[in-house]
Length: 330
Image (cartoon, rainbow, N blue to C red):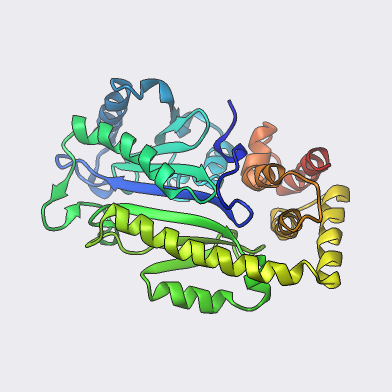
């Protein structure tokens, strides 16, 4: 089955994806730090059974990380389907066949629903997350307080338990020195803007920081309004770049390196694919944007090694990564 990131989406010249996360807990079960191995095992079974006995039974597979290789667990974390901590703990989670939805079971919270959708499509992602959420709410005693809302392991998630994120590609704003100002501005609106790939490339994640005292719709509307403003700003600055010979030279050099390199570490790849993605949006390259996004989602070290069934060193992942890129790009 095609993965969710092969489908494009609205404003995908600037927006890689939208993501919605919901945190839920059972009112009759202790949090992870007080949970015995037996309680955790039984709770996972109970949570899985509620999905298995619902009309969503055929949408998910159960993944037990304890039975998989370490690099496979890392790969799932790299794709943001689970947290890095959850991968280390070798937990159990549910995963849809197109990898658009995952549900971590008995992690920091008893239930962590994650849903991805291509482009600026927060409402679509929320609609799917809400459907999954209803399965648990209708079948299990979910911890909820009339004043505080949904009860969560971390106080920051109290209220709706909702986190909405939009992944943005902002090379023009970054080159113009505007990221710090932008981060400061969105911070005053209760949002955060942080680097998506450890300061590599020009990829950033815009997310809400407040989940209490605000409805799900208001949180989504706020993210959408701010994201739309950022998209307009980025496009206006890209219009200037399009007429710059120095930028054109830079983008073509990056494309050339990707097409010819025999070894590429992940950080260098992200820097180069950021340039190439910009070049595609400006019409310099005939390359399909879907190919660029496919590479971004599938070429982190753990994923490269897992897909090639290798437990070898990062040096091997650099070699495999370069080969995959050469075969993928026109």
